[in-house]
Length: 530
Image 1 (cartoon, helix red, strand yellow):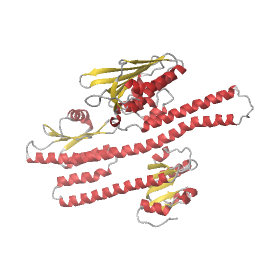
Image 2 (cartoon, one colour):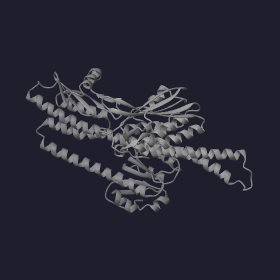
Image 3 (cartoon, one colour):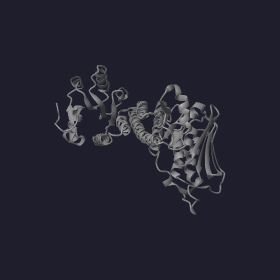
Image 4 (cartoon, helix red, strand yellow):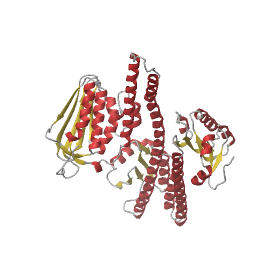
């Protein structure tokens, strides 16, 4: 049944009866600028062998497996009903999204509370989609006009055709092949390097010459935008370098014209490289967000189930019943689960503060004054566990610095919590001091060392990697590497410092952070007291 006839593309739509009654479908059509084709059941997917651009379907814990099987069966039969799939969830419960990523899933909307989040997410998605389609249409029109006006110049025509066809390239390899074909049509042979978002390099060109050409281009990356070597020219942009061989004679008119062509061509390729990297990052971000939400739902539910279960058992005890050993154990489990739940919530809060401007919050403070409450709490927790806790300030009279006091407390709190958590006996030592660097001036450093279980070299390398993977870190949260260390590293970097970590299995761990003591020319005359 077609809900209403609107101008625009046709979108398959299915939702549970209760959701369908709550949705204002006519208004939703107007907002999205489309025509919704309402399916009575998931089996109706079989009857829609006609290809559609998009499908909007409600995902529930009960229909998750059935929907995936329907779509996989249609895909295997070569009758995929849509190019892009949007799923939304209204009913609470765990759903598996992994099968749908292979079925062109582009957006998952967890709208568990109300419909506002669903309307907002759909409106943003379709608005941005319309903008991209409009831009693509305008680009095509501009390309057509340019093709007509420059038909006399075959070389410019080749560049324009490259710019137009580059939007059909779905990855760096295809883009490199298209670029090589264009260079050959321009009368030169080429190869190149593209930097991907993970820091790797994608080479395109003759495979038998890859080691030589790749090394040459890497050596010439920082020598300028256009670098001439014999009868070759290397064009360097931020994400791509292209080596054009068999160039015309140096200083000739064809040579200058070819360099201009090469610059324009690689500049266009650079723009497409950035677009591809952005598209890939958006796709990975959406998938990571969905996986993270599913993981967090499971992690939060585990301690919550323990709290609900044990509290329910205690709640059913008669008022005059004696308090048994089992009851005491249940109370301890409730406290343990509540502590664990609070720890995860604090981790999430800390993650939400990553990438917040730390420079704007920097003020002149006394470091011992800022850390007094945090260190006092850490000392109490260490003593409760039977550990010795030591504090050492190299300038006991008052160590002044210009920094973000809230962020510093978060860092020290995390480091102390990890040290206490993974130390069963021995001591925790917090040391604060100042070093002088010839170029950076005075630096504030703070170390937290313990006599705990320690870490292997592989674990240390994982914690200190250049791009901390928060999701993987969280997955290992209760296996020896906590989310806290990766968050600490990002906080320290945002404050202009760095983190060093040394550890030996069974010998303990030492985390040391180094921060610029003053962000400006010098400290203010007064400091903020806490």
